[in-house]
Length: 168
Image (cartoon, rainbow, N blue to C red; front, side, top):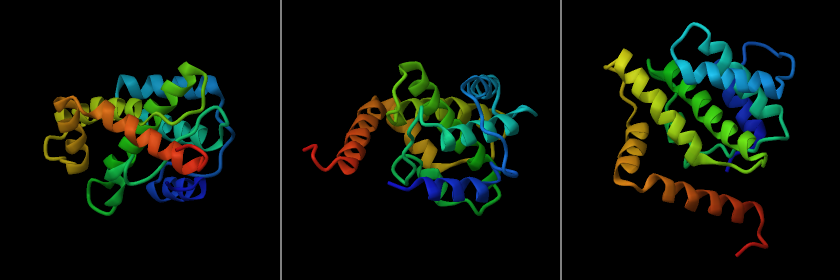
């Protein structure tokens, strides 16, 4: 599990934060999610990605665990596809945030993040067929095999146990 400090550093490195900005409200976060749901490649998607990541960082309404198990595609952010990986990172966060806001409970939801990510990845692959991100394709294979939700639940429970040693 990675800390919020790491999350903030990651977002700066990925260019998801251009500069310190005002706090993003819940309604602005929901509008950003709606923008990303329409298209992750639209001209307004970059601003939406930045807004949702700021909201996730600042809001007490949501909790997102950032790590190689939840976001394996962030391990390699140096190649020519780094901007797409960064955008897809924001999409994962958006899906996770949307589910938490709907439930009104700040509890990490990697499955919802992955489902939104997979939808966005299909859009990216349609527009840019040469882009291939093996870590996301692994998630696609798990979804096709019917194991993605189970894997997400196992991961969520593992994270919960790591955060609360009193849970066995």
